[in-house]
Amino acid sequence: MTTLSAPAAAAPSVSASKPKPAPGPPSKRQRRRGEARRGARLGLLLIVPAAALELAIHIIPMMIGGWIAFHDLDQRHIRNWTQAPFVGLDNFIRGLDPGTATGAEFFATAGRTVLYVVIVLGFTWVLGMAAAVFLNSSFRGRGILRTLFLVPYAIPMYVGCIAWAFMFNQRDGMVNTLLSDLGLIDENPFWLIGDNAFFALVVVSIWSYWPFAFLMLLAAIQNVPQEAYEAAALDGASNWRQFWHITLPMVSSANGALVLLMALWLFNQFTVPFVLFGPASPDQAMLVSPLIFSNSFLQWDFGLGGAMSLLLLLGLLAVSAVYIRMVLPKGREDD
Image (cartoon, rainbow, N blue to C red; front, side, top):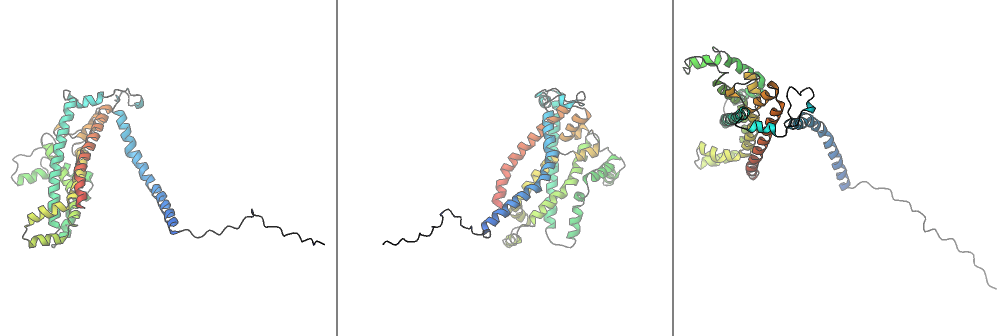
C-alpha cells in the first residue's frame, strides 16, 4: 500500500520585495560637489546687485547713446525723442568731415586732447616715480611726507579744482603774486581765458592725478626684493643703473596698468575743465568730453554729441586693445 506524502511547503515568492539598506553618509566627493554648487549659487546672488547697477548706469545709457547717434535728435524732437528721424551716418559724417566747421573743431579738439594726455601723463609719471623711489628708502619723517604727498588725492577733485580756480581767476591772486615775487612775470595775466587756459588746465590736472601714480608705483617698488639692490651695490652699480636695470623692469606690470588707466581717465577728462572754466571751455583748452557736452546740452544737438561719444568710445577701445596686446605679455613673463 502506497503511503501518500504530505504536501510540500509552499516556496517563497520570488517577487517578494527585500528591505532596502539605509542610505549611508555622503562621500567626500559628494560633499565637495554640494558645497561647490551652493558657492556658485551664492556667488551669482551676490553679483546680481552689481550687475543690475552696471546695466542701469552704464550698459543701457550706452545703448541709448548709440541709438541717438543715428538719429536727428535736437530741441525739436526732445519732447518725443523716440520719434526722432533716422539719419544713418549723417552725424558721423558731420563730425568727421574736416571741411566743415564741426569736423574741423572735432579734429582740433582731439589733437589738443592727445597733447593734453601726453603732457599730463608724462609729468604725472615722472613726479610719481621720483617720489616713490625717494620715499622707498628709510629716513626720519618719511611717514609725514607720504601723508602730505597723498593730500591732493584725498581731497575731492571738485573741491581742489574750485580752490585752483579761485587762485587763477584773480589777477592779483596767489598764482600771479607768487610768480611776480619770483620775477617770472612782468604783468599779471588772466589764466582762465585765452592761450593761458591750456596751461592752467595742465597744472591742475597734474596736481590732481600725480598722487595716484605715486601710490601705485610705491606699492610696486616695495615688492622689489631688497637683495637685488644689495647685490647690485656690491657689484658697483650706481643708483641710476639700479633704477634702470632693476626697478623699472620689476615694476613694468604696474607701469603698464598705470599708464592705461590714467590715459583713459585723462582722455575722458571732464571734471577739471568744467570746474575751472564752467560749461563752455575756452577754445584753447577745449577737450573732447567738454566738446561733446557742449554739442549735446548747450547746442541741443544730441545726435552729433552721440556720434562723437561713440567715436570716442571706439577709438579708446582700439587704442586700449593694442596697448594691452603689447604690454600684458611682458607683465605675464615678469610674473
